[in-house]
Image 1: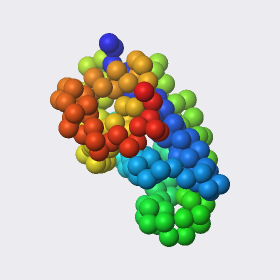
Image 2: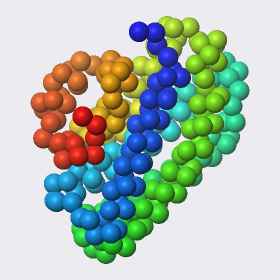
Image 3: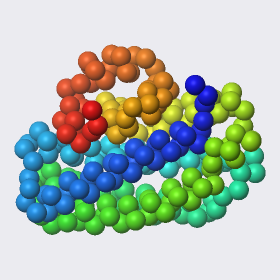
Length: 219
């Protein structure tokens, strides 16, 4: 299949968009005292932490690698605006973990759920317009005009490696990525990963660790 950095970015955006939608939906339920069982609750915490970790890694990949590469090829975009958005979102992301710790300890659970909801909603409000800017400037046609198939293949691999190095734990974040996608998109992202991950680690070695997240993931 022909490599496409633009399509890869859209797939990653889809993962994060769904992650934000699911966490917002579930924390709203908690605010109305619809509390899940212990295993599902722990799965929600893992799911939310995976979202936070992966968003941070995605923004880091763009700031450190993608944007400098795009600029060198004169790919026009409001980079200052995008990087400023990243800083705003990163500030929110750093505030989420302490709230999750309060939620996990059941201390001030309702107020912690409300705080988490507010943070996620603010994050989502920035995220939507942010990816619209990216996807309207980093189009498949524009990227294809500047980068060969081989260059895009190398970039996709480089971006994926950087994201994995800056997120974790792998046994949660990788299933989070794959199972927030469905069908062909999941298959394509899987192909960027070593076969041992998709054939051994996820279904066997890591299964017990990420299984609590399954109620929030796609089949």
